[in-house]
Image 1 (cartoon, protein in one colour):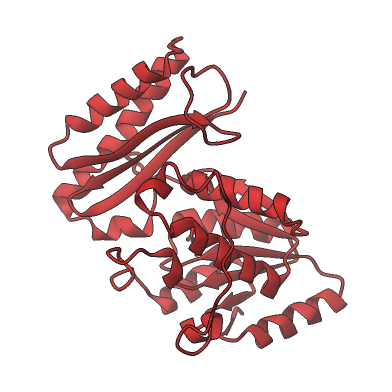
Image 2: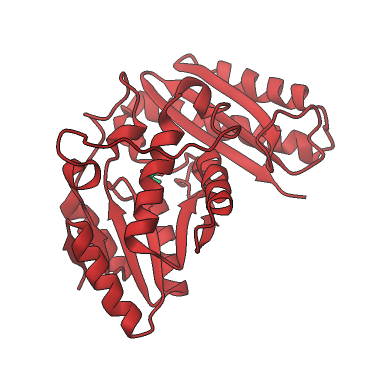
Amino acid sequence: MVKVVETVAEVREQVAAWRREGLTVGLVPTMGYLHDGHKSLIARSVKENDRTVVSDFVNPIQFGPNEDLDSYPRDLDHDIAVVEQGGGDLIFHPSVEEMYGKDFDFYTYVKVEELSSGLCGASRPIHFRGVCTVVSKLFHIVCPDRAYFGQKDAQQLSIIRRMVRDLNFPLEICGCPIIREEDGLAKSSRNTYLNAEERQAALCLSRALNKGKAAIEAGETDAAKVRAIITEEIEREPLSKIDYVEIVDWNNLKPVDSTEGSILTAIAVYIGTTRLIDNFIIER
Ligand code: PAF
């Protein structure tokens, strides 16, 4: 039976009890409204650890002033059912006050330089500082052996790996593959914003990435040409508006001219007013 707690003290007490029994702990950080992507992270944590904690917290400090903090979907009962079915043990569902003090009595942020300014960071300048701060807090609260993040947020995964390395967090970061709908759309809580026409239009993201990947597999090494193939495919969709199409070195997130190394091809596209992201990574 999954237990839901709202305070840092309760999480610490439960994790300490598990530690006394010599059990290992996995953490799946989420903002709730759990979908199949989250389910896959929970399943992997349950497989690799004795106990699994799922944090369920819409983190206000990672949303910019004109972003979707207020409309971000929330459904705790659904989340409890998903974690229960997935075999998770504890849901940490804190209030904003529990995490950041009364009236945001909070001064300390964690920022990973270099990796946070490009890609999504270019149009979301405070986003990764907010992510790193909340994830650091969760790591200190839960003290997990392992933490699980989806590759759909590839820049986030790269930044968190770097933060853990730079700040000597004693845990392993486990990256998990993108989970897709049958027609190719990457699973995301934000897909719920799409109406039927937009849902269809959103397929241009995975279609464009597939074309780009096929071109690389067929021998295309010029990153500019691959970006052009992806851009052209997205622009064929009238409801789309590109935020970025980038090919970067997967090790340092710097743009590359050639597709021959380990690369992340990442895109962010508005479908109507909904901003969606998707990517593929080639590791060599
Ligand atoms: O990927 C997310 O859902 C969030 O950015 C995270 C890691 C839970 C931090 O709020």
